[in-house]
Length: 226
Image 1 (cartoon, helix red, strand yellow):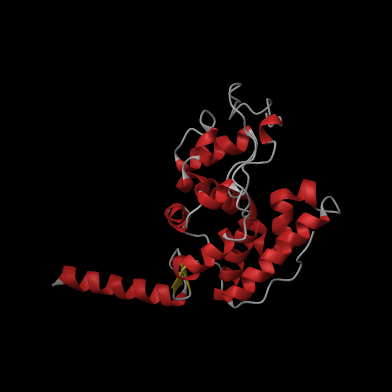
Image 2 (image 1 turned 60 degrees about the vertical axis):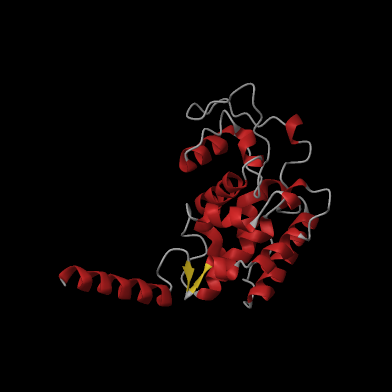
């Protein structure tokens, strides 16, 4: 009887936590999966050109599988803030491979923790275009895969691909997400796009963000650009 009573009390606590929005992976009674529906996900994918490799690679199932490893994503202080985070993340989701990425040099040879494999390339891959050997190394450590020696896994395994994006987001973007969408642009690609670097790309991101916020029924944040 004691064991049954404990289990009942735990179940009540979990249910209360879900309703209050305190359980990882839940947004005030809704899971992230309830918000990122198949229709919502398809709407994002369908905006990509037919020639985009990611169009036939990224799947909602792969995203949800990856979410199991980063279940604090989409779980902020309020339901609206959580939905804005989800909208912001997907506004930044890009192509599968960086255009002409293989010709770029993303080797930081001063980084001894995650040394380069001279036979591998660390150009932008995945939803948030993971780049540099130190990011591949740290992301791989987080998800339990040696990405320094197999960076191409980011474009062959959809769950790993989304895990690298969620790792980057939770590590580099989540700490400043409350500062507005413009701050997320700066955290992801600020050196290239912000301060007039590529205003067209910034406006495209803002357009996607406001569109997704509208679809999720929340007002966009302030500070939209960078």
